[in-house]
Amino acid sequence: FLYISKYINSFFCCKHIIITSKCPPNLNPIDKRGIIKKLDLYPSQNSFFSKIEYKNFKSIFTNEKIDIYTKLNITLITSIADANPLIKFLEKKGNFVNHIKFADHHNYHQQDISDILTKFNPSNSVKNIILTTEKDRVKLQKFKNEFKGIKCYVLPIEITIDDEKKFNTQIIR
Image 1 (cartoon, rainbow, N blue to C red):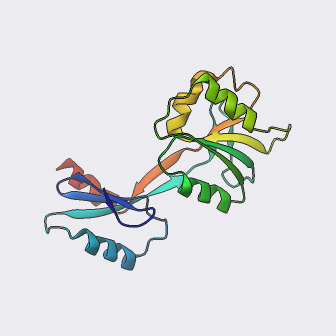
Image 2: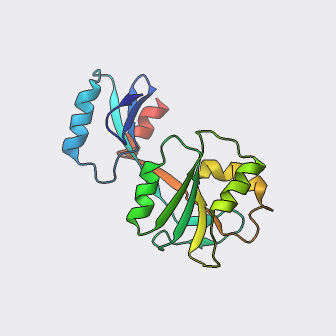
Image 3: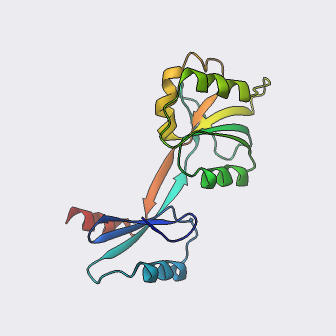
C-alpha cells in the first residue's frame, strides 16, 4: 500500500490499474491530480478513485431498516483496522457513538458477547441500538440467541469508482 493521506490508500489492482480508495466524497480534481502526481505512474498505468457510500442500517436478524439520518445512541462493535472514518461519519449525522473495538479479524467468543451486552445499555429506549460492520455481522449472527430482544443492525456500504465505465473496460482487458 502507498499511504497518500490519513484516509486514502492506493494499491495496485493489477500492473496497469491503481485504485486510490476511501476517498472523501468531495475530492476535487485538483486534489486528484496531486495524488496522481505523488503516485508517479508509468504511462501505461491508469489511476482510479473510489469512495465508500454508507446505506441505511439493516437489522442483523430481521428485515427491519432504519434511515441513516435517524439520530441514535449507537454501541458500535468493530474488528476492523481503522474505524475512525466510520465513527466520524456516524457522529456527523448526530449520533452518540460508544465504540467497542476488537482486533482486526477478531473471531467473537461467548465472553466477548457477554462483555458487549454488559457495556450496552438499552434502557428500554428505541433510540439505543448495536451497530456493526458487514464483516462483523457474519461473525455475530451465530449469537442470535444472546442478542434476543436487542436491536442489532449492520451498516451496509457501497463502493463507487469514479469513471466506472473506463475502469470496467480496463479490468476486462
